[in-house]
Image 1 (tube, rainbow, N blue to C red):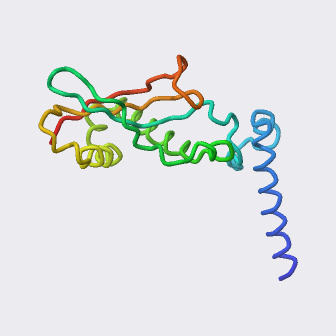
Image 2 (cartoon, rainbow, N blue to C red; image 1 turned 120 degrees about the vertical axis):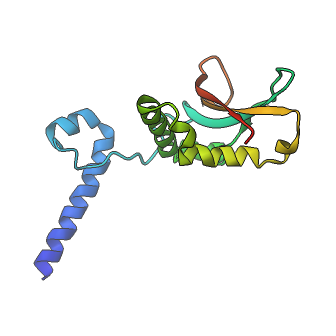
Length: 164
């Protein structure tokens, strides 16, 4: 009984150590030790803090062809926290992966995906949505490089959403 428990504990400790070591040199580790990709890749610390911030925002589009400032939706994490942990990375991969998958198979499917419906309900439930001057809202998903906006910022995708 004790021997079996010790073996399980040793395997778990070895697996945790391997996951930490895999973060340092992924390619060599994958080639030499983990050919079947059984050890996950996760990051304890942000590899390049505040170098690539992916943000989701929207802006109001008015009838006179003007637009409001960009209003950020997912700016919930304090900036200092990105130095240690960047948890939104999984959300970004999920949204972009979902978008790529939907647009490849059928362009109309992304319009009805649960993620987009949640975002749509959020931006149209704001108080300014009652304003009749707003014709539609534009979702903007962009990468911000560093603490402030600069030339390296890149819009990943935009999508116009009409009032339901």
